[in-house]
Image 1 (spheres, chains in turn cyan, green):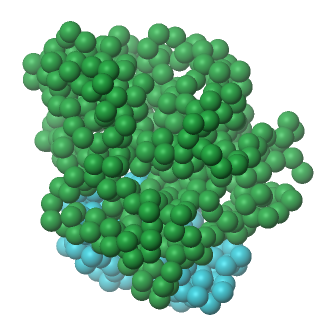
Image 2 (tube, chains in turn orange, cyan; image 1 turned 135 degrees about the vertical axis):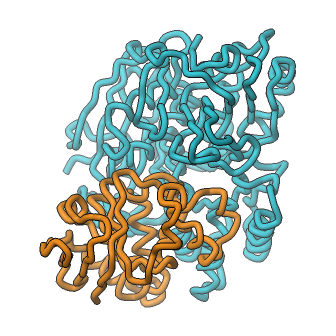
Length: 164
Length: 416
C-alpha cells in the first residue's frame, strides 16, 4: 500500500477537541463531522484538504477525549495517513480499529514541513519527503495490529477470528 | 516475575499466571460502558458488523449524560437510538435523564466498579474507577462494540509509574490540587501508554472522592489507567454498594517501574491549570488574580457530595461577584438530592448561582454554560483545551471546588 500527498502540519498535543469540537458531536454522520475537521486550530482545513493529503503532528497526537469521531472525521476528509512523534493511546487504538493509517516516526514528524509532498510505502515502513529529498523509517506495527489493518478494522478481524 | 497492580489485574482477567510489559493479551471485561455521544457510533458499528446479541446484558452500561437533558433534536435522536438498543438487548443498566448522572460519578455510587475488576468505557475518563483498585480505561466506540459483542478486549500490558504518597493535605487542598500538581510534574504525555499507580501512607488522608478525582485525571498525563492500592477506606466505601465478591491486588514489593515519584501531600498548594493544557500548572497564590467571567463547579472530576459541601461552606452567606456567572452542577441524582436535603441548594441559589440538574453540559462545551470569545472560566472540570468550553478565544482554568467557589466570590482566580 502506498500514499502520496501534501502535508498539513501541526504541533504537539493536538487534542480530539480541536480535531472535532464537541459542539458537532450530536451526529455520527462522518460527512457532517468531516466538514468541521480541525476547525478550531485550522479554520480552512476542510476547504484546503485534498484526497490523499497527509497530516503530520508532534508528540501525543489525538490526546483527550476518546471520541472515535476524531479519526473518523480525518479519514472522511480524505487524509491518507497521520504521521506523528507519538499518538495518545485511545486515538492510536481508534485509528487502527476504523482503518485510518497512522505511523509513529519522530524524525519525520519533526522535520517534514507544511506543504511538502510526501510519499509513504506502508509495507516497507518508509516515509519519503519528496520536496526535501529525505527518507525516514517508521516504527513497525506488531504483527497482530497489521492483521487488524489488513482485515479492514477491528470488527472485521473479530469476524475472521484474528485477535491475539 | 514481579508485577505491578495493573499487570496483576490484566494477568488474572487474561487467565495467565503472569504478564510482562509490552505483551499483548486478550482479557475478559467485567463491564462495558458508553454514553450518549459514543454509544450511537458503537451501536452503528455493532449492527453493521452483523452482531445480533450482546455477550451479557448485565455487564453493559449506557449513561445519557453529555448532551442531556437533550439539548437539541439531534442529541435527542442519539439518546433515542441508545434507548432502543438497550430495550432490544435487555440492557437494564440504561441510565436516562432523571435517573442518571455523570457516568463516572454514577457508576461507583451504583456499586458497578470494584477492586480487581477490568472495566472498559467509550469515554476517556473511564480511568476514574482505578480509585477503587480496578483496572479501568477509556476506549473508542469500535472497541465498545467489540466488547459488547465478545466480552473481551485486547491490551498491550503497560509499564507503570509509581507515586508514593506521604503526609496529608492542608486546609482546603484536595485531591484535585494533588493530581494537578502531579500532572505539572509528568506533563501531558509523561505517562503515555503507562499506568499510574498510587500508594503509600499518605493515601490514608485521601477520601474516596479525592481518589476518584485523581484517578479521573490520569488520562491528562497520557496514562492508560490509574490505580490506587485498596485499603480500609476503599472497603468501607464499597461495603454498602458492592455485594459480589472481588479481589484486591497489591503490587509486588520488587515490581519494576518506569519511574518512581515521592509526593509530599503536605507541600501541595492550591493549584490551577492555565490555558490551554492540563499540564500548564501554577500555584493559585502565585498566579496574580486573573479576572473571570464564569465559574463551573461539577463534572466527573468534582461533582461529588464532598465537592458540593466544600463549595457550600465557602459560598454560605456570600454573593457571587458582580459580572460573574457561577454554575453548580451536582454530578448525580443522589448528590443533587443530598444538596437539597442538606441545605446546599439554598446556599447556592441565595449566593446567586445557577443550580442545575446532573449533566456533563459545559465541561465539553456542550450546553449550559458556553463561553463567548474572550471570556474566562474557573472550572472544576478536567480539560482546558482550545475551545473546550466554547469559543476558541475563551479560556478555562482548572482548579478545585474550594478555589472555584472562592473565585466566584472574588471575581478572580483565587483560593481561600
